[in-house]
Image (cartoon, rainbow, N blue to C red; front, side, top):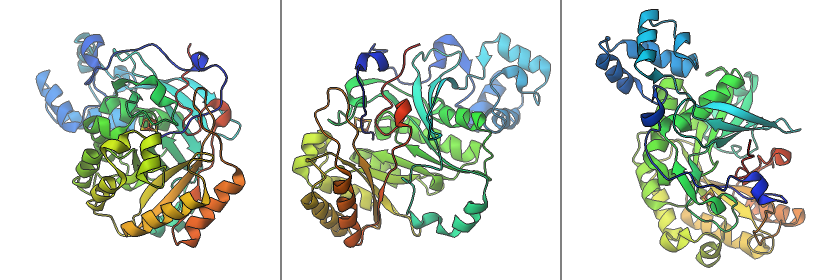
Length: 401
Ligand code: SF4
C-alpha cells in the first residue's frame, strides 16, 4: 500500500536477489524458535519437553511482555530447564532490528531480521513519532481523545507483511521486487515487539497505532497476518482498534476479515487510488480481478464498531488521479457507498523507472477541499522520513550491508 520515492540508483538500495517464496515457519532448519507461538502452542511445546502446560504463561510473558531475546533471560523458568531447552535446539528467535536509519523529522526506518532462524532476508519497519496523520479522523477512539492527550507518547508503526509484493501496482516500487516470500506471524508481530523494545513502549500508557501498510499485501498472507494480530492482541496486550490493515482490494481477504470476531478485527483501509475502474485497472491491475464495486460489496460485510470508519487511501498521481474531476468522482463514489468513510490522501513521490509525476501542492489541496465540501473527511498524510527512504512507498530500497 505504498507509493514510491526519490532516487538515483535503484540497484544500490533495493535487494534484487530472489530468496525463494517459502511459506511457514523459518524455524525449521536453523533452530526452533519460540517467538511467534501463541499460548496454546507454547503449552504444547512445554508438554512435549515434559513440563507442565502452565509454563507457557511464563514463556508468553517473557517473550511478548518482557521482550526477552535470549533464553537465559527468561528467569521465571528454572535454569536447568532453560539449559535443556537450549540444548534441544530451542531459541527465543524474536526478530531483531539490525539497522536503523534516522530521519531529521524523528522517523526511524529499520531493517528487521529473524534472529537465529533461516529467514535470511530483512524486512522493513517504520516508527513515526506522532504518526503521519493517517490515523486522524477515525471517530472510533474519540472518547479516549482527552485521555490519550495526557498519555506518554503518540506514535505509529508501519509493518510489513511480506518480503516484496505480488500485486504489481504500477506506482509502487515494492512491486518491482515481486513476491519473495510471506512473513510468518512471528515475523510480523516481531517487528512490533522489536520496535517496542527499542523505544521502551509501555503498552496501555503509550498511544501507538499499528498500520499494516509496509511491504506486501496482508490479505495475500492472510493466516500469518491474522496470526500476528491475535498475538498482538492476546499476548502483547494491544487493541485491534489501534491497528489498521490496508488492502489493495483482495475481496476474499476482506470477506474473511469481516468474519473475524471484533476482539481481533483491525480497522480496514482500502487502497483505492483512482476514481473509476478504468483508471484503477491501469494503475492497479488487481482491479481487473476485483473491480471497485466488488470491493465495496465486500467492505459492506464488515460490521463496523460505533463511530468506526472505513479508510480509503488515495495516492495522488500528477495529471492521472489528481484532477478536480477525479476528486468529484471519488466523492460521488464514496457517498454512493453510504459507508462511514474517510479519505487519506498521499502525494506520490517519484521513483526510478516509474513514469508518473508528483502532484502540485495546489492540486492536492484542491482535491482535499473537494472531498471535504462533499462532506467526506479527507486528510493529507504527512510524508515522514523521506530523507531515509521511509516515506510511503520508499520501503523497497533495502540498503545492502
Ligand atoms: S499492494 Fe503491493 S504493489 Fe500494491 S501498493 Fe501495496 S505493496 Fe505496492
